[in-house]
Length: 449
Image (cartoon, rainbow, N blue to C red):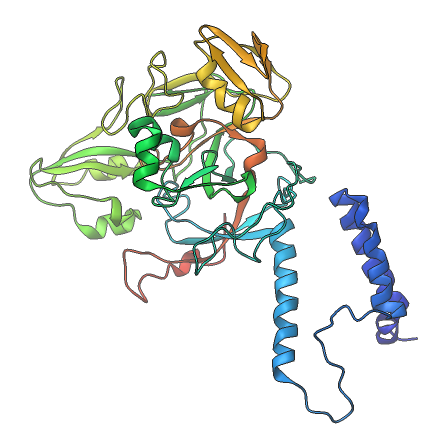
């Protein structure tokens, strides 16, 4: 018996697919799906049910129906791609410069869900291959007829400090249809709920798995103590590891002339963030990493390079209404932040009116409790509470482009339930500041992250 006849044997094919299905079932952990083995048995052995009812059986010599062949190919592609998207990889495009120059605006990524383990879909009834908004109508791409609780399958590892992580935007549970990329809660703090909904509404409430995707670097994990001092990250008393992509902005004074554009291109700066102010003369917010500061300072037409460090009170447009936890007793800025402890599953903290702003959203929104404050007393689910025990791990995410990133400094902790995966490979990249074909970044195509 040769290999071809073995592979073509129906019992061999049934056994192979049954083993693969059982391995997936053990990983998935829902034994109701054991009934799927009956479907596999019928597909390969008994063949009593025509599962692919749209397929036509042709007689010998009969002309094939091209439309039905295309339909079969499309259905197969949708099923396979939906399965891959749910459990293995998802495509994602970098829309902003918050991770410049680790990840560039216009990078198209494959995000691996295997590293941290994929989440079981909380809203399984959804339009295929669409995250949350239908491309034509702009309506929501899912229905909540079936809602699953948060559950994560086994992955290769947990989120580690300094990992680049893709996650669901924590404040994305409420979205303004008139300003879908804005933070609803920021608008409410600045302008009030009634004005915000009147000007930018209506609002849409989304489950965790349908919130927009963000990508940042995890600078602190559950149980860490984080502090940012003059723009430098310190975790558990130790400086953060240096990465080439981490940059801050600097005020660069020149002799009145602009820096040669070729120099910015060689450094790889995002031209969309480079602005010359003739009244200075110079650049008020030039994004540079530590190595590039010296390169710019040594240019003959540069008079001075001064780091932009935000000390309290926060510079415009930041304010205490924008810096987490949005309370007057926390005198923090984006460059001088903390110290702050990152909540850890099973850890218990004492609660009082001073530290409640740090944990209020965790208690109510992320962990599903009813939180009330009556005077100086705190009530959780109707009972007086002097402490709280966390049910999940949390993380602190910050963009590498430190002065051009809306991150945990502006909206707080990222729950474990919001973690999606990690970028694995850049499959395409284009520069939105250039025209075709110069906008294609050929060196970044199929680059591993």
